[in-house]
Length: 312
Ligand SMILES: Nc1nc2c([nH]c(=O)n2[C@H]2C[C@H](O)[C@@H](COP(=O)(O)OP(=O)(O)OP(=O)(O)O)O2)c(=O)[nH]1
Ligand SMILES: [Mg+2]
Image (tube, rainbow, N blue to C red):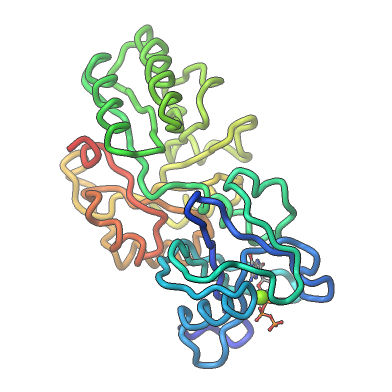
């Protein structure tokens, strides 16, 4: 891809072993951002396709041969002394055993251990992306029982990240249903974010999900939460999410939906343009199903969010 001359295009691999651990290495002291930890990778040579650069760099630095890679996220960052485009790919399939070919420190760590290491500033959203799954289910239902049933179906379908958005429930019911949902999810290592508009005690949840209106009212990230997410529809909302330190966004509607018939859909083209400068993991929402995952990832998305599509 052509970048303005002064932007350094870098191919980066989030390499995972069969138990899900991620490969990190320490940058040489004298290098740019030296001494900090990184995901292996390096600069594209002139005219070199990004996947070719990724394969070359991973072989040179850690001695593995990439068999397949999927796009994870693109991050633009200005270090002052250098502007980079980090073009980050998931590498779950490779041959060879990783070894530090350049004498660098190297480790396999779990996604949650990544915060124990000092990374360059541009890596914060990459770490969020590496921890997030590809599906984000929005839990709704007409009444308490159907919410609990829907929760069970979401869990059974293998989804690991859920937004509790039980807007139809009465104030009294909400807290009780949330507690049942949290208990169900905890047993299956499913993380739950609670919609901020519900005004509930969320101390037992893993995160909070801000509506776009709630997002725009905040000038800093809510404290004490593992995950802070936000619903966005415009570039300005995405920018605000980034500015206050939101971990990930949901951008909607990508396609026409029955729930918002009067909202014009973004379409994939506009969706991917908006993601170009988001510098955040973003889930695609609106009129999509799980089958759209590859399409969404090709457009730069973390994955797919949806209400009904996960209950099939
Ligand atoms: N590989 C990698 N580079 C990163 C990460 N985060 C980050 O800000 N960078 C920056 C640091 C550098 O400015 C640039 C990568 O350049 P590099 O030094 O790895 O390039 P390279 O492997 O081609 O090394 P060299 O040939 O110049 O020695 O991207 C990361 O997680 N991995
Ligand atoms: Mg490198």
